[in-house]
Image 1: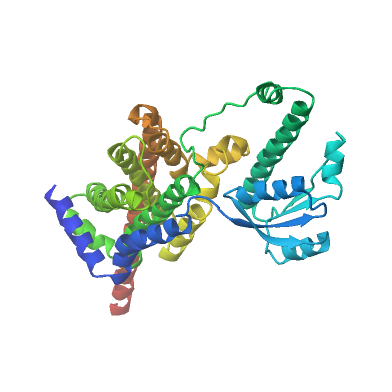
Image 2 (image 1 turned 30 degrees about the horizontal axis):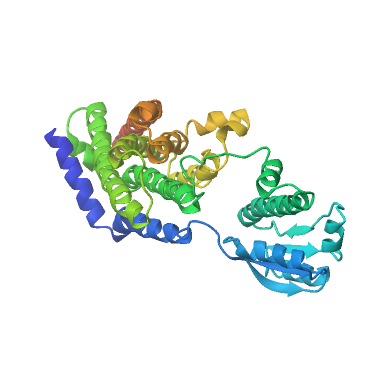
Length: 407
């Protein structure tokens, strides 16, 4: 145990002596979380600019325009005379939606003729386009119900009878977990945690790859004492412990300071999230150790880290259901710590479910981390033994050469 503590102290001194390590492991995660959190802090899109072409200019058409302008998601910024002007606005990304109210709309409605109101949505931005499409459907449905209600009252129906006829089938829905459809609540935590995965894998890569590149691993093995297998397991254990402690500090700052700062609540508890996160940290650090042990140079190990981390968030199933991806891709993503972690984390963070429901994901991460840790240890042990044999062979050759020269 004393030897492991000596290695931990050595690792802390090494981190403290490097400005790059201090920046990467301590300052960068916090700065990055603050930066990413600021992008979606508004939570939802509001007052998106839209354009109106009113060819009818009647009481009904003006009411339609008021309905659209009253929506908090959009604001009428442009009043145009033809579709060509709308096309120009779309081309310059000045408007997200265009409403075309045809001539004689009011006259035809009074004659009970079915009418269409063409609406053009600029869907080059998927989120804005999808939001406006939903709003347009709701507004047009309300306008249609209002017109039908007025027509029924003219035929002798009372207001109550007309309303019951129009709304014969009522929609009663309740949004769960994120009722306001707040984009900040939905996306920001996933982005933060994907960044932390990159840093934890990077930490596992650097702590071993740096030793191997600079031939410092032998010094660590001497401090650990004992046979090569025993000394190496102590070195691996000490390095894992120190970076898991750093990870714990980051998760505490994230869940107890940064989440409240951006008004993002954790539904169940920050402690449950932190417990699952430590399993995630173990899996990530072990993954980094495995990359560093398999790849021969620090540069190659860093490339491997980037290869895993860069697409991890998109493929994790957080934004697009993993079950809708190709089966092979689903199997591969089960080997990347972020995918099972985000599934378990969502249950704690968003769905108000405890460790009982996220336990299977914690177990998944522990198995994954243990497998990566064992594989990294065995591969590095074989490399060290092979290197030792090569060095003995070289020294033996030098002695023979020296003896031949003397003779």
